[in-house]
Length: 110
Image 1: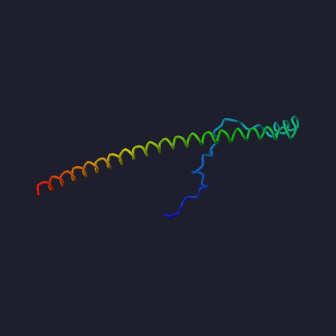
Image 2: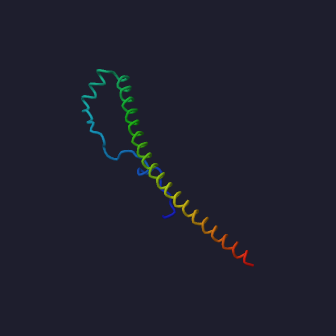
Image 3: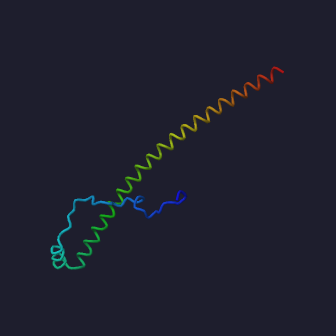
């Protein structure tokens, strides 16, 4: 379908990692179980929440950096297009001035 717009939920539109980017190793279940027993469930929930917030912040930072990079590329392309447009408009102005001068000379000869 050539007229079909892409699904925004496709993973290519988001910067979520498709592979493990960190070298963190998940502890064994027995270690996690012992930690929950030692610290208590509320403490483990708080620790997990802080870890998740940190993880989300790192993802957002990566996403912002990639957006800024794309934005800089788009800005550069836009400046190039503006320069080319300005040059074209200048050429049109010079041609119009030349034609106006030629018409004035023709009118003065009559």
